[in-house]
Amino acid sequence: MTTNIPNIINQDGQAHYFGIIVNAEQKHTYFNELLNKIEWTNEKLVMFGKEIITKRKVAFYADSLMSYTYSNKTKQALAWTPLLLEIKNLTTSYTASHYNACLLNLYHDGEEGMGWHSDDEKEIIPNSSIASLSFGAERKFAIKHKTTKETHSILLENGSLFEMLGSFQTHWLHSMPKSKKIIAPRINLTFRQMHS
Image (cartoon, rainbow, N blue to C red):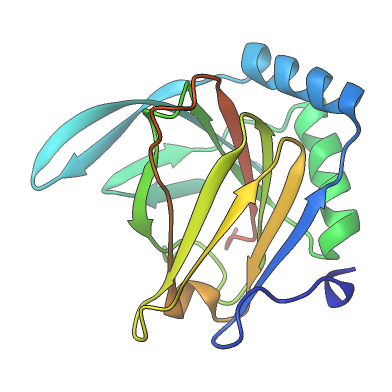
């Protein structure tokens, strides 16, 4: 289905915003179950040689025995839950890509965000699809070309799907800016294709 969705960027990869793909009842059910049943942990990162613990919480689910290393920390995969498999299959039905891992983020409010980065760790299959599904508070998602500094921003709505693929991670950075105006939580699922 990706071919019918416009490419937000005009060079160096693809970025597709599918809009809202789940109905109001599903959004509510998915959000509450993810909030309460996922094994959330505080993110531990190494920045400038120091370990910091973020307010934002994370979880990593994937096919058996997979691990994922970023920011000098390695996460061991938890086994898929029935809900995550359901959401993964829904995502695949839109992107036509198959995923074997999912990194989840829980942002409690707009005071928590994500700085500029690329999802280009060695475990991720180069040029593969990364599909981001959002539940809860609407948040701005910003992208910036590494060379030209061209920028775009998208408002990720509750229940919406955004996909990055091709050479996107090689040439673009992305971030989630902080905003004091946002007081509600957001849960983000990023489905990935990783070396097993």
